[in-house]
Length: 258
Image (cartoon, rainbow, N blue to C red; front, side, top):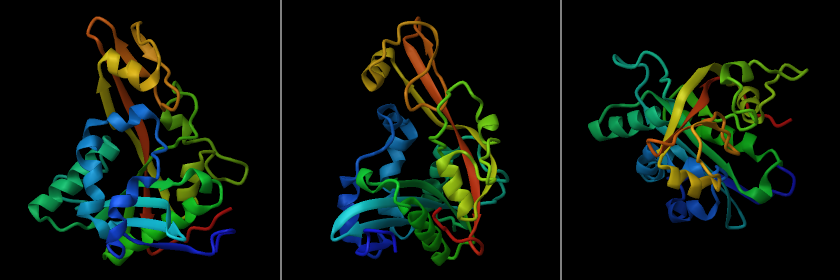
C-alpha cells in the first residue's frame, strides 16, 4: 500500500456508478488550450458513461483522488492495420463508432489517468495504470494501447521522435509518463504525430493562453509539446500535438513504482 493511503480504494466506475457525477471534482491538469480539442469536447465526456467497466476511480475516505479512462475498439481490423497517426482523437472516434455500430471490441486504449494535485509524486500513477490494465484485462482483452502525452518534453521545437530516444543511466526513458508505462511492461511503438488537433481564432488563442498571437509563424505556448502555428491574415492558429503510442501486453508486466 502507498504511504499515507491505507484507505485507498480503486474500482471501476461500473462497480461504483454513484461516482460518475463526481469525476470532475478532480481538476484537469492539462493546459487550458488542451480543453478545446473539437474531438475531445464532443466525445471524451461520453467515455465514462458509455464504458464504465473501462473507467477506474480511486477514493480515500470518500474523497475522489484519481481517475482513469479507456475506450474499447476493434483492432486490428480490415480497415485498421496500423495504430493511427492521429492517435488520441482517432482512437476515441473508432471506439465510439464501434459502439454505435455494434462492432465487438478486441482491444482498448487508455485515454487518461488523472491524479489529484495533493497526491502527485506518491507513486499513485503506477497503481492507477496497473488498475486500468486490470480493468481492460477483465473485459477479455489482452492488449491495452495508450497514446501517451510525454509532458516532460519542455522544448516544443524538439521533434518527438528524438525526444523519445533520450534515456536515463538506468535505461529508462527520461520522460516521467513514458517511464511509468515502460516500468509497467509497456513497449513504445511509434510517434502519433497528429494525436490532437486544436484550431481556433486568434481571439480564442489569446483567451486560452494570455499571449498576444499577433505575428505570423510559430508560437511556443507553455505546456505545449509542439509550436502553435499562426496565420494573422486568416485570423487562425492551430496546434497539432504529437503523442507516443505504447502497447501493453496484459499477460506481462506489473506496475512497480521506483
